[in-house]
Length: 441
Image (cartoon, rainbow, N blue to C red; front, side, top):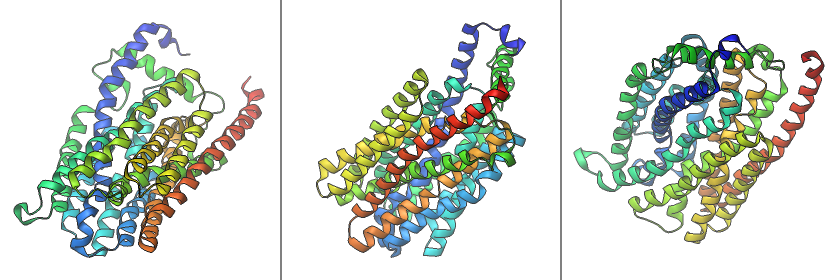
């Protein structure tokens, strides 16, 4: 432990982490809520957009998913750039551009224009989520990260809680205003806050503890010293090139692919699943769509905090994935029975969202520095390809069979696979740590 940390009491350090949590997390949550809403509001626009533009379910599924191809291609470069120029400039650029691109969806008229704009939204948003995950490692030590990740990732769920009702209200009240369809107003009105938030990032977000005017220099130095000491610890890989040769990185990417498949499915298809249950009113669909995400928010925070208190990661992540698989299977089987299907979808959301904060503690056990910047982005970008595969598979299932059930079963299988792979990662990581132990002693 560096000398500067000895000069700061544990109470002062705890107060520093408390201030950082209160100053950073609400703002980062707000930014990701905007990103998530702009990413998935196409699921609500779909309720009217498809008939207006004569798009098929398969066209929608491809357009919803192609976002993740752009996301995949630009994720690693964006995170490596963040490591060089800082989070403030990177997140401002990302937020501003995705907001503008999302607004432009209001004016697409053809399938190819739809695909192109969705692809560009993915390009512009690339690097935001892994950038924040990396950014938080500059502030908080390993023992606090599942909880902090969980607090940040409540943005997934909060976006679902507030995004559904807001989208429902816009879709239910704005149709025909100014000569525009309700789905066009949805993209315009939900894109404007992102553009404004991109400007606000430049004024409100410090790059590192030393840049925060609300921390004393001593406490800021101690916080940075603790993170730096962990990064230098034996067993931490700091070279991005070397990290790419570590099989644990690719196993994490596969695990994340499986977890994300469930998240993308509930994000893009919850409104349609509720409609398939027999609900037709857009405002009612919006409010019902919030229910699974409310439960998921609670589960996400609890699972992350409990994992930090116990120091256990494997069971917390695997058990959540198994709950997700069971919930998705039940949703597919009960899709014609409205109340039961919504209950099953809520169980699926609990499992899916609870897995995220604990999962992101896994790669941080063996990555640091530039390796963390690049590898976290690589894991996220590869994992998020599931955001292309899962919605498209559900779309194809719906087009071929008239029901989303088979697509939900497919995604449930991926969630089950995630649980198995988490146990495989744990054994692999334990062997790697054992191998390094003599050199570290």
